[in-house]
Image 1 (cartoon, rainbow, N blue to C red):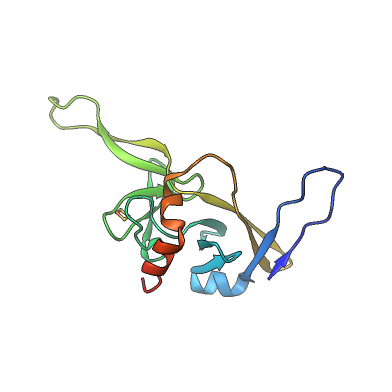
Image 2: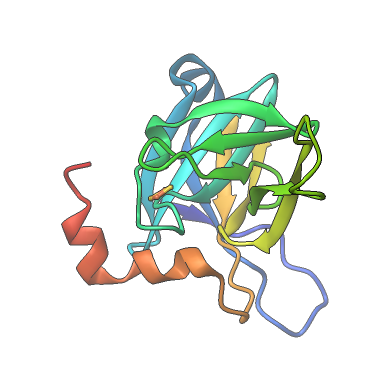
Length: 159
Ligand code: FES
């Protein structure tokens, strides 16, 4: 189901928010997945008092992010894809990788670096205990878009 935020004086149509569920249910479950607007598989997470929403299928190969662990890297909360352990920041959808500054130094010192935004993050908001997602429809391509076609959604339905 959908609701529109109050109309404003802007000429472009207001973005549409999609009802996901009651916050208490999402907090209890920790994470829920939903096909939003009939076109987007979205994962909504509740972690340490915060709600997050992102594409459900991992940008790398379509992994089931709803089954990933949440861990912190460089002070950034990430979901760790259960398929090949890619790390994706919850707030921005950045892919992180481990970089080595000097491969000859011992001990090896590694750092987590960003590959840039790889996973599409959506806006999530709570209104009177109801949680809504507004799809991020920015025109720029983001790698996780690849797994949001009808073909992949059908293929991944079972996972
Ligand atoms: Fe997510 Fe490969 S599919 S890490």
